[in-house]
Structures are given as structure tokens and as C-alpha cells.
Length: 65
Image 1 (cartoon, rainbow, N blue to C red):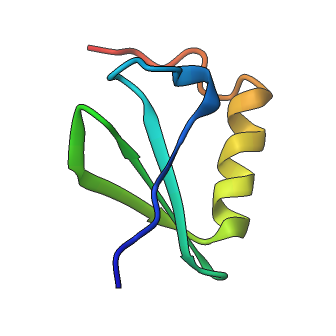
Image 2 (cartoon, one colour; image 1 turned 90 degrees about the vertical axis):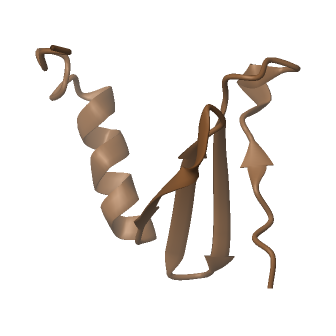
Image 3 (cartoon, rainbow, N blue to C red; image 1 turned 135 degrees about the horizontal axis):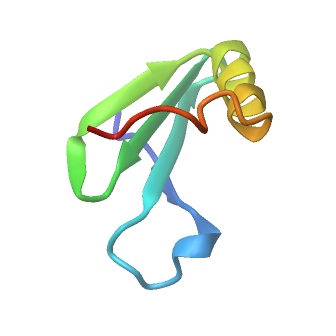
């Protein structure tokens, strides 16, 4: 069964965007349009924890090198 990917509404017509799919109620899949074959899979609960941590600034000091 094909996965129904949804693009972020903030992307507009841009090529660089995030896609999200929920093929089952207990699985969330995320991919970036520049590397569509690289897919992050998480449960809704784990993704919620990650999003809350990001919003709280827990990853702001990570080094990009």
C-alpha cells in the first residue's frame, strides 16, 4: 500500500520541505524532500516528546560540525 505523504503547508511550492505520513495509527514517518529515501519512523508518543523538547530549546546548543 502506498504511503500518503503530506507536505508542510509552510513549504508552499518550494522543493525543500518536510513530508509526514501516518500509515497506521501507531506509526509516524517523516522525510525531507532532498533525501526522500531517508525516512525517520517514530511512534506518535516519541515524536511528541521530541517536538516538545525542540520547542523548549533542548537542542539549541548542538554543534553542526
